[in-house]
Length: 317
Ligand SMILES: NC(=O)c1ccc[n+]([C@@H]2O[C@H](COP(=O)([O-])OP(=O)(O)OC[C@H]3O[C@@H](n4cnc5c(N)ncnc54)[C@H](OP(=O)(O)O)[C@@H]3O)[C@@H](O)[C@H]2O)c1
Image (tube, rainbow, N blue to C red; front, side, top):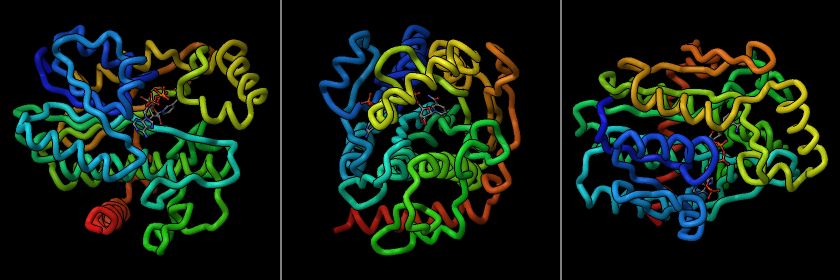
């Protein structure tokens, strides 16, 4: 991708997305960043230059997401890249949290908000001469992967939780909430959403990827919520994983990988790229096969349809 492209990113106020956004701006791209609040945007994005626009939307609230999509559509500016990178987890918590529309928060932010953005902004993306969709998923979508083997495995069953009213806390319909599995499931949803988008638009490059385990030393970042639930356990986990066994990836390298995906790698159609741990301090970034469940085109279509129906049901009231 040559410089000067218009790229929209979610999750650029922290971690991997912030690192990638800075690099992309320095490389001469025009960015639109979706941040949850003015405070968060100012605090985290002091660096933004004249080429960057910040729009506010809280991805936990579908009406807020819908509103920002309306603003973008009113501007009629084609998008060369849509980078759906925001994400959260709150592993360690026993009770589910819900968004204003009653959906479990991990599923609402990581999947539903991004599907709504994708549904509404696809026309802007398809107006570009070289569009691409990049979705930050995770290897934990795959029960056979290193991270996916720890704890209960990802699995959406027959999506019963999504068709029940009110929606169940788990997508597979299980009434027992498991925050760690909810996160893995949301990343499986990311993979299936990417697969279905590619099936709908074969000319569109759709790239899902896994950055590896990224645990910054700072008190913010991806594990901030889990740290609140279990400060000692998470501090120990961070130290052991990052400093003792060196099985983590740096924010800097992960940000650089995201830039590569946005600007260089992947051809037309769907691809999955994984930053796999080889040994202490060593990763290999390669195209890989998704898990069996993430390769299920019929399930991808059903997830897309059910998610669209649920989104429409709450936005039309
Ligand atoms: N870190 C890892 O080990 C790891 C591993 C595999 C996959 N991933 C994935 O990588 C992506 C980026 O993670 P990261 O490590 O960079 O984490 P991070 O530092 O916590 O960044 C997450 C980003 O998502 C945004 N976000 C979360 N909830 C939001 C909401 N309701 N509205 C608007 N924005 C919201 C955050 O905004 P605020 O700054 O306002 O909170 C932040 O910009 C996520 O999709 C994550 O699932 C991470």
